[in-house]
Structure formats: C-alpha cells, structure tokens
Length: 49
Image 1 (spheres, rainbow, N blue to C red):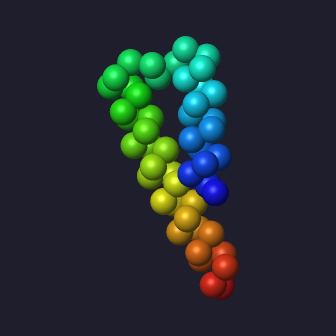
Image 2 (image 1 turned 60 degrees about the vertical axis):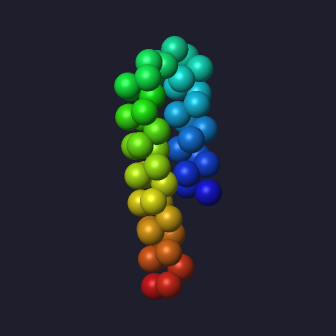
C-alpha cells in the first residue's frame, strides 16, 4: 500500500514534467522502491507491536 502511494506521487510529479530523463527517472524509481520497503517494515512493526 505504501509503495502504491509513493508510486502515485512519483507519477504525478512526472506528469508535471519533472524526473523525465532516464537518469533521474531511474533514481526516483529506486527511491520509491526503498521508501516502499521502509513503509512495509514500519507497517509490520506497527502490526506486531
């Protein structure tokens, strides 16, 4: 769920004309994946504790 939210925000930013180059697009994708993992870990911690 967190990755979907971050991916949607990334997509809206790209629709505004930012991060459209290959290098910046790859970087934003990697950041989105990392933040998705962070959100998943935080959700797991929140559920188990």
